[in-house]
Image (cartoon, rainbow, N blue to C red; front, side, top):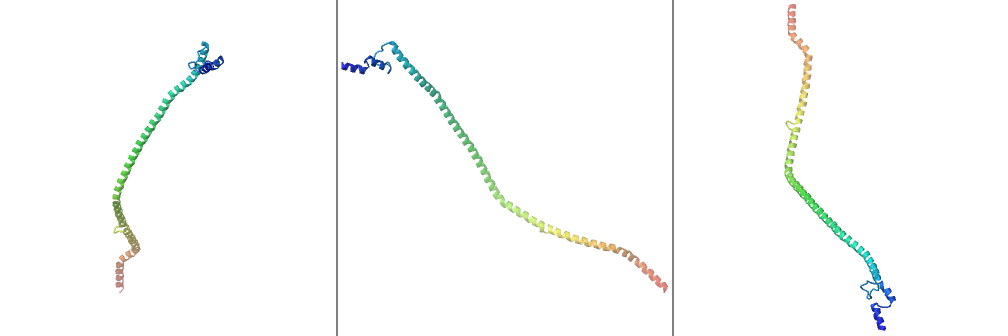
Length: 196
């Protein structure tokens, strides 16, 4: 008998007190005792189904959220990567164009520098020639200094001529007297002869 109780205790077929405490625990398929009545088993199933529904709803909403969010997040990450790659590609193209234009400007400047380095001696020679011409204009045979000296000489001669003209104007009256002088001398000689 002792062994039977132990066996019943292991299987779960103990006394009614044990049955009542054991009924609420575990799923009906896991229990070893047969259901006493339909109402007790249905209440157990209802409790389990209510708990399962709440847990299943939480799991379903979580799974549905994950099913919607994961592709959305993956799409956003993929779109950001595509935009970043497109931006980097655009920047690389713009930088390459800028680099090409800078290379072209540098090449143009180098060629113009070579041309200007060849033109510098020519420009220096032209400048020296023009400086010589300027010196000739200032102090050459037909230069400004010679012209200035000629002008001062002409001014001196003009002033001499002016003084000579003024002197002649003063002597014109005496010149008319000189013209009449031979006739007056003759008259005087005649007068003298008559008196003798």
